[in-house]
Image (cartoon, rainbow, N blue to C red):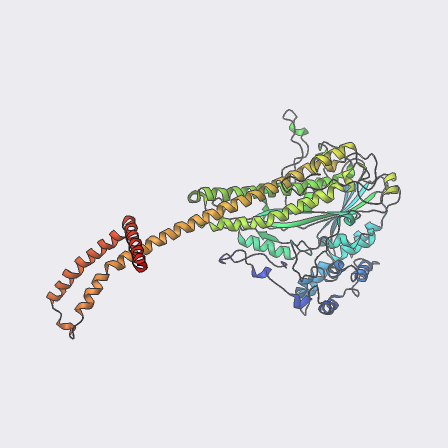
Length: 628
C-alpha cells in the first residue's frame, strides 16, 4: 500500500524487497469488503464537534461529503481525509493519550498555504498570501479566517481571472474552497493519493471515470514525475520522513540506478510521482471573472533538483543592449514547485514568444504546462543517461561497470521496465485531458456568449487549424503509441487556437521518447540476458576444468592407495622396514605414471572414437551370432 518510507537497507541482498512497503493493515481499517470494521473505526475520527476553520464558518462541506459518501463510495477517502487531516493509514500516529498526537492532528487540519492571483487584461497579477505558518496568535487572526473573508469578498470588475494556488491539502482549505466556490468533491479527492496501482482489497481505489463522463467535469489533472538528487542516504531518508509530514500521500523512491562508474557511491536520485489539479468555475454570472483553483504538491527541503533544475525561460538579452537595460536578473533558483509556479506566474512577459495567441488569463495554465513539461524533459534525459550507462557497462564491463556482476544491470532494466509504461500512461492522460480544456482555445469560456451557451468544459469550437493539428499529431497510433484521439467539441464555433495548444507537440515528443526508451529497454534486456547466459557458460566451463584437474589428481593417487593397501596386509605394522618403504615407492610411482599415461591416452577424442567403433562392431557381431 506504500504509505511509509521507501528506504531499504543497503546490505539487503534483494534491493526490490522493502518490508515497509509490504504492509497490509486491513485488520485495523478494514478492506473494500469489510463494512463493519470500517464503520467502527471511522467513528473514532468524527470531526463535527470541532470548531469550523474560521469564525462564522461551519463544516458544511464536510457534512455534505459525509452525507453522499455511502452513495459515491470513492468519496469515502475524502470524508476520512477531512476528519483525520491526512490519509487514514496515518490515523494510528495521530490519536492516543500523547498530547503531541492531538497537536499534530490539529496542525494538519488547520494547515493553510494559499496564494491568490488576480489577472487583469495586462500587467502582472496582484497577489495575496494566506499562510498558517505565519499566523500571529497575539493578533487573533488566522490565515483560514482571512481566506474565508477573501472568498466572500467581491472581485474587481477589471479582473479577468482569479486563481487560488494551494500547496498541499488540508481539511480547512477543502472546507473553505469547496463550500465557498461550490467545487465538486471529486476534484479534491483526486489529489489526495498517487498510487501506481491498487491491491484487490484496498477500499480507497478511485474507480476510473468513463471518457464520455469525464468530458463533463470542469477540472483537469496533470500527473508527472520529479527527480531530485540527494548527496547521501541519510539525506534521502530525511526527505522521505519529511514527505510523511505532508497531508497528501507522496514519497520519493530510490531508483536503484545510482551505482554506475560515474556516480558518487553515497548519492541517490529520488523519483517522486506528483500531481497538479486545476479547476475552473462553471456557473458564473455575465460579466463576472473566471474563478479557478490549482492544487500543487509540496516539495521536500532536502536534496536538490536534478541537474540544478530548469533553464531560465526569459529570453537572453541582445549583446548590443547595455547591461542596465537587461532588466531584473534576480531569477529564482528552482527549489519548490509552489514557489516556482508563483514566480513565473508573475512573469507574463516570459510567455510572449510562444508563437500562438496569448491572453493574460492563459498564463497560469501556460506556466503549469511549462513546469510539468520541463520536469518530463528532465526525466527523459535522466532515463537516457541511465540506459546509456547500462549500454556501456555491457559493452566494456572492465572499464565502466561498478560491479562485475552482470545481473546488476538487469535489476536496473527491470526497474525502468516497470516505470516506463506508467510514465507513458501519465503523459497520455495529459494529452487526453488538458488539450480539450477551455484554455485550449482563445475564448477560454470567458465571453458572455460562451457563458450563455456553455454546457461542457470543452472548447467552444475548433478552427480549420485546430482540425489540422489534431489530424497531424493525435489521430493515429504508430508503433504502439498511445496518442490521444481527436475529440470533437461539444459545440461548434469559430474559436481560434489558444496559447495552450503550443505545448501539445512537446508532450507528443516526450511520449515518443518514452516509447523509444521502452523499446530500447526490451532490446537491452535481451542483450543483458544473453550476456548473463554467456557468463554462466564461462563459469560452467571453468568449473568443468577444475573438476577435470581434481579427477587427474585423484587418478594419480589411485596406485598409491592400492599399493599402500597391499602393504598393510600384515599383522604388525611396526615391522615395516625401510626396505618395504622403498619397495612401496618403487612399485607405486611407476604404476601411477603408467595410470596417468593410460588416462591421458584414453582422454583423446581419436581414442574415444576408435573405442566406440570397436564396441559397435562387437555389438553388431554379437547380434549376428544370436540370429544364427
